[in-house]
Amino acid sequence: MEKWLCTKLKNYYYPNKTLVMGILNVTPDSFSDGGKYNEIDHAIRQAKKLETDGGADIIDIGGESTRPGHTPVTEQEELERVIPVIEAIVKEVTVPISIDTFKSKVARLSLEAGASIINDIWGSQKGASNCKGGCRV
Image (cartoon, rainbow, N blue to C red; front, side, top):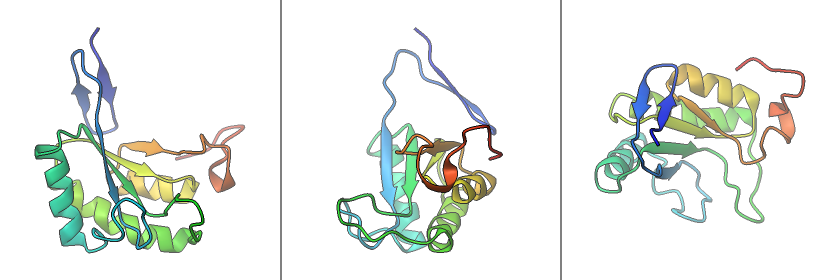
């Protein structure tokens, strides 16, 4: 069965393949990488590595930890973490960029910055991204 991922910028074709999402957290308290990629140049290097060495079909950027006991961040703080990284990485990789957020403003501005996918672990059921009745992203 053929698989297509259609984004605002490009259509990606994945014949008979499960897609691999490479995770790139830009948070100081991430349980998986502990803030290694908070600097833009480190984030770019890791995104390229995820694409070329890791075989990632999508790069997922997260600006707020979801580990148990994490300290929530403000919308502004999350924006300051993810937008510069998205703007830089989208110029360096050929795979789509995903934003991991449940905040609608972060999602919208991330799409404007170059992300193509919204990855909301709450399924639009929590916080400001609750889109019942429709929302503009």
